[in-house]
Length: 88
Image (cartoon, rainbow, N blue to C red; front, side, top):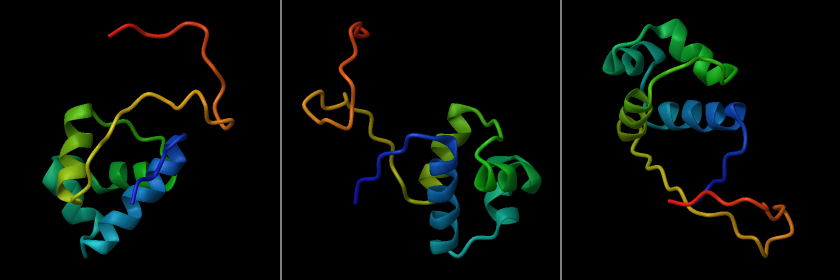
């Protein structure tokens, strides 16, 4: 299943669900990342905690998730056409 995330709170909900599906406590998951449980709790509940990209990718791996980045579909009416595109 693919899930499109638009907000930090949306990502927080996905991360919390994935952790619970793996049977991990916040303390166990946080220890695997080398961060404190309160920081992981803030990430999962409000989406406001800050972690590095390296830590985020490690968290995805721990939860058996993967990150997929792709261009938005400009034909989809849910998205607005952006005048200036980023060149890669």
